[in-house]
Length: 307
Image (cartoon, rainbow, N blue to C red):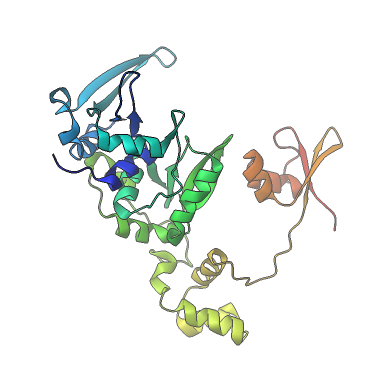
């Protein structure tokens, strides 16, 4: 039997993979399901030696949903119970609930399988869904993807996604390699979105110049416009680099935002970002209220606090 690839298994567990132990079983088994046949076949070949004869080939399932009046097709497989899977079960599950282990090591291979299961590319940036994990666990995963400037982005209620900005997408794909699943080739498509100041591949094209730019900026007090010409780097690339490395390049005056309901002050917020992170409200809509371009949003009146 081929030894278990822990990087593949843990990448799958970050996504749709599942470990389980039956009531009368000592050891754990692994199952995987997706709507893409190509996807499940690709994962299956890494576990086929752990499958019974019944699952040497993947299965097809149809489920009818009364709410939508549609039949949904999925593909899946299960492995035998195996001692080598059991140690991962107790690492990844507490009282039957999947967690992100604190000693998790993300490799390019595990990130690839995670992205196949839960990732997508939209408007040029990457989103990886983390619906089953806590905010603390999402922060932990973002830290593991720090070299891609990963941030958590609120989706709805208490659900977050891992967000990787446009100018780090090329590096991300270079690390995990080409798409191995025909059905998901669209998830590797990098389109050139409108931004005249930033060239197609973003700030990574100028990585060898930033140390000199930062040194000139901090030590010699040279402005960004001058540095842009000196090093032949678009201004937007420099400001993006500064932003994601917490280098202060302009004075930012933050205006507190007041939230009213029926002329009663509900809360004072530090910024629109704080409101978005806590409530999931649209920052642009709140800004439009504060700038008198619309009257209300979400049933509230929003105003900048007078300084």
